[in-house]
Image 1: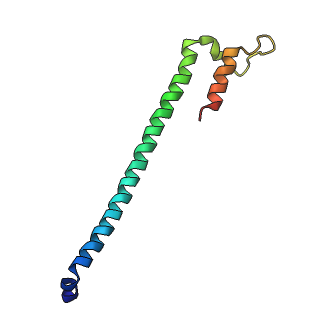
Image 2 (image 1 turned 30 degrees about the vertical axis):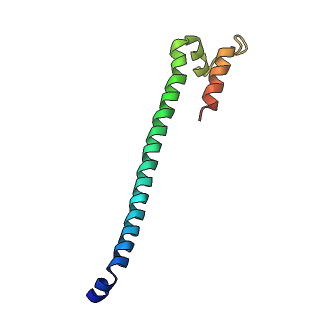
Length: 91
């Protein structure tokens, strides 16, 4: 076995290098996927925060959260419609 390794040391070194580089590439890809997921989660949370901030800036939009809102007496306003549409359309 030792004689074979001494005779084919360059082939063994190449094989180890190729396998090592493939493992390193797989690890780097895995870490990149994790980083992208975290970045996407942060971006989505920021977008949701921006959307829900509208309720605090425009208190009249809070009516969309009421279960017993009487839309026959007070019809849905354009702002309320746009707010709900934004919430539904957001991924």
